[in-house]
Length: 223
Ligand SMILES: [Zn+2]
Image (cartoon, rainbow, N blue to C red; front, side):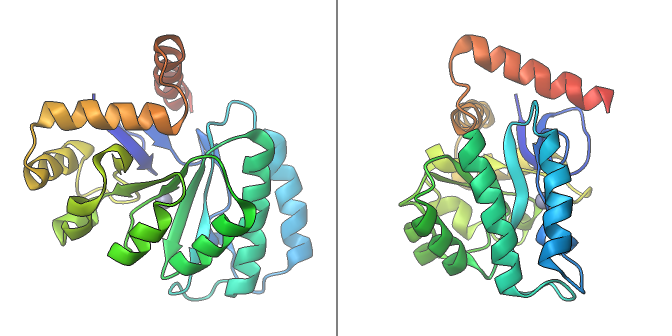
């Protein structure tokens, strides 16, 4: 089974659909003028809908995207997500662009004990090394076709794959490319990432695993 760990588009694969199986506010949504009190109101409404949610996110920090709240306001928003994840004991899905040291600071400060998915990871060796001091998983998508350097150094038990927000490549294309790049069989990669996915969501035992996978697929088709 090819698991898509971070998807914005519905597909036939078993996937974590952002906004369906998760809740959060993406940093790109923090448009200007940004007001913390307006945000707080929106946040209170949003967190009424956490039932049946498997993760908090996609949330995060972005120093490149233009026309959004400054980094201090982004951190304020991200801390709300971390507090919610701590309260509900849920993993978190992070968007991080040129902000790995900021993200590390928050991980240090909160001593966050749940799993963290660095989706579409674009950091370097050093950043990965630092992040691996926490329960961080790394997911890669279509950018792999440009460079697979970090894929090759990611511990296999911390790896996930995703389609993200693009439509050009299917999750199968991404699995096929990754298996070749890692020099392992497609079936072996599928099995490993299936286990990683269940471990990430703490659903590794047989009963919760099958319920979890069933729920991901049925809830997607209803929406
Ligand atoms: Zn995303």
